[in-house]
Structures are given as C-alpha cells and as structure tokens.
Length: 167
Image 1 (tube, rainbow, N blue to C red):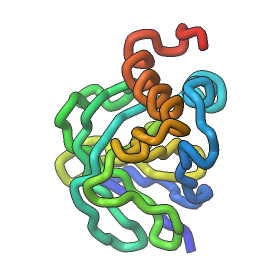
Image 2: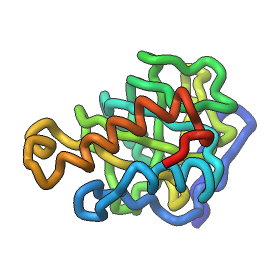
Image 3: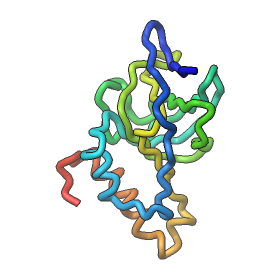
Image 4: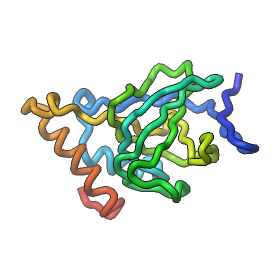
C-alpha cells in the first residue's frame, strides 16, 4: 500500500524509509557531523529548530504541529519565520516519534504538500535529520558538555555562515 501525503491536487509519495532520530550523546554527534549532513550529504532545503506543540493522526500519518524557534535555512518555504507553525508528518508504521513539548533540530528536503493553513508540510523520512535538543540536566554532566556546546554552536553559526563554515 502506498502512502501519499496530499494537499489540493499535489501529492507526495511517502514510501521512502523511516527517519531515525540522531541520538546526540550515544552517537557522539559533532558539529562537523551536522555540517557534513547539511552541506555534503544531501544539500538540505530547510533546517529548523522547533518545539512540538501537538500531534494528530490522519489517515496513514502522525502529524506533528510545531512552532519554529530558529530558522537555520529555508528554500521553498518563503513564509517561514520564528514562531511560524509548521507540520511534520511521519507514516504511522515508522517507529521514530517526536515528543510533545520537546525541542528538535530538523533538517531535510522540501516537499510539495501544504497543511490546512497553506503552509509547507514536511515528511519525516530516511533522508531527514531529526535530533532532539539536549536537556539542561544532560548538559550539566561534564561528559556531555562538548555535545551540548557543539549542538548550540551549530544552531547559532549555520544561519550566518551556512556551508561556508569551516569546521
């Protein structure tokens, strides 16, 4: 069965693989890893830091309504700005999930569908970078300090320097 995410007369095939959340400390993700993904791996169309406001189920999808906190990059979504609401969708059978009230760095490619408000809607798939922001308590542990600093540095530097940043 093919899952299709649609708006008006535009549909997006949603049969690509499921997203896998990047576990910052367990995977020892560095600022360089984020730049490699954003600049070399897939040439992303968007990068946002968002907080998950709510989730709903629709057809074969879980839809996450999020508030954009930081716009790191955008291509097709010209109306996005801090405090914009954007919807991220995942197929129900995918195991990964976003947690309500949590903050994430999400990077990927634009899709052609829009939500009910006419804003761009994004599919979370195997090509999407999804990384939860580390909590203050996690960052207080000395062993995690570098991961927290590099996660924060990327969010501050990428919107300014983009792929010109030398890591």
